[in-house]
Image 1 (cartoon, rainbow, N blue to C red):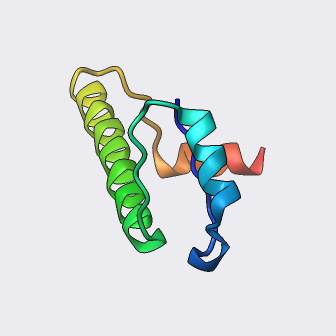
Image 2: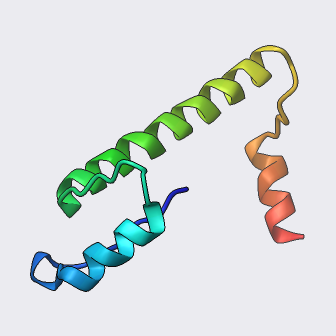
Length: 79
């Protein structure tokens, strides 16, 4: 199960801890500052983008891409 709780450090109280314990029972819980979370998300999204980009390049190399000239694209825009 994946869940992200966003709260300020001074909002962390016994009720929040109790909720986490009840929700995740025996699972390991990781608490980290938002800056670290943002860095992890950035890396994750960059990895996904890189994978899509590599697949797109492979598709073009294998003639599976859609190829349009600028004139064709501009005519589609004006249609």
